[in-house]
Image 1 (cartoon, helix red, strand yellow):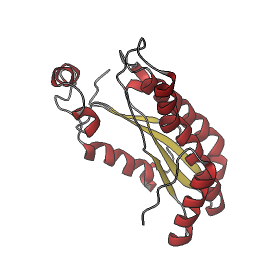
Image 2: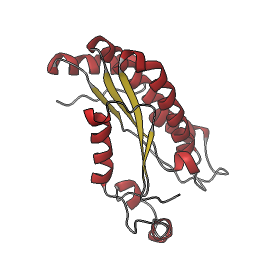
Image 3: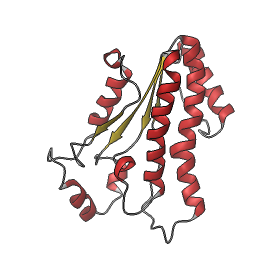
Image 4: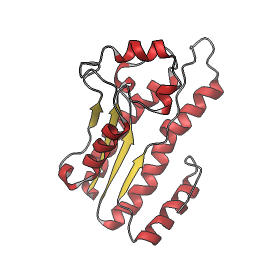
Length: 190
């Protein structure tokens, strides 16, 4: 089932989610996992680049969460899991749009958790650390080595480490967990 709505268009998202509910009978879990990054210096950062990152990393989380929550409320509950990042807590030295959106996602997660709890909708976020993904592969090797050298667990995160955090938060094992930002970073910034 391939559905590709514009994640910043409320009507396209609502239509896509309604078709998922129609096909599967309910809409129980949303993983807001779309995201883009940038390493552009503030001095060269354009408003267009900053706006694009805000749209995908924050506005889309709002639009998708709103559409999902409406369907989940009808079902008697559900789970929303947002993609954050360790830089949402610590910042980063360039590409300020990415950590700014992740700071905002953390705040949105906590606020929605408090608002939607009465409807039995749990809202959490996963904040990966340095993880072996395409985003990491785009960085210079010396930067990756520098970043990963300070991870107390002594290794990069793997995609399965992040997937397991999502699985936990989506499962009944986390039925009393809402409003958290789960760091999955090998204690990188402790």
